[in-house]
Length: 315
Image 1 (cartoon, helix red, strand yellow):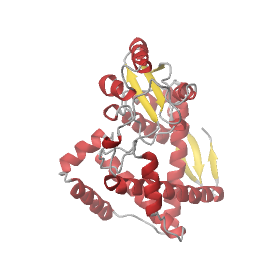
Image 2 (cartoon, helix red, strand yellow):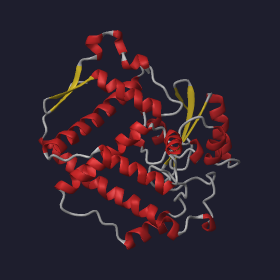
Image 3 (cartoon, one colour):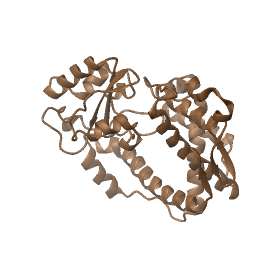
Image 4 (cartoon, helix red, strand yellow):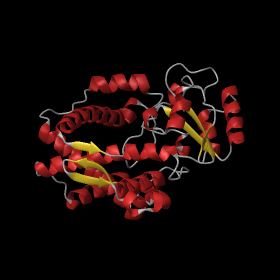
């Protein structure tokens, strides 16, 4: 990762400008530093500077940095800000809500792959987005009781009762298992396909990758967010099937898509008695639906902002 932050070993290459956003520069050095942060939060995965996936990740990170820069510029233009005092209050509220001390908060964040500094920055960015949207979009994001009930009835077996200080956790569509060798991956795949072990059981028992404690659940990660080799492997199988092992930095990865019609060998559905009750899931579903609607409105806002911006990408 250090090598990635100083790829090619020449300052003129590391520090070259890779994007200009309304006259403000983003350098390759800036991008590489952000890539290092991303890789560090992805358990069990590392990338070498000459890895083709590293270049793809750089482009994804650069796009994210351009979006952040546009938000910062628009917030500055509109004199919209979020103070450290406001972030302190939000952190205190989270500690109170979850009955956590400062050290316990730091420990819980580490389980999510975040430092306290990164968590505070995420909260600041989220607050800035909401404030900007409130400033520019004169309509509220409304989630009705009927929408909550409808979503619950359709997804109650996949709703997780697991708590997270980062917000509600709803099972995602992608299952992920990482093991040390291709041979072990092939053996696990055979057991899962035979029905002698579920994908979630295999992940909890053997995986050394992200989402292990959640049965290999990658949460809100989507197929488009995966590195190309993983994305290709996932699209090569139908929903419910387990992909062929994919080698990733010397380790083997199995993937599954938990949507659509799955084969008989998949894990049995959660019994109705074990499903989260409507009362227990209501707040979780409401927050999830709110986020979906908010993200849609914000994306429309950003698309409009981007269309008016002068952006030159040189990566």
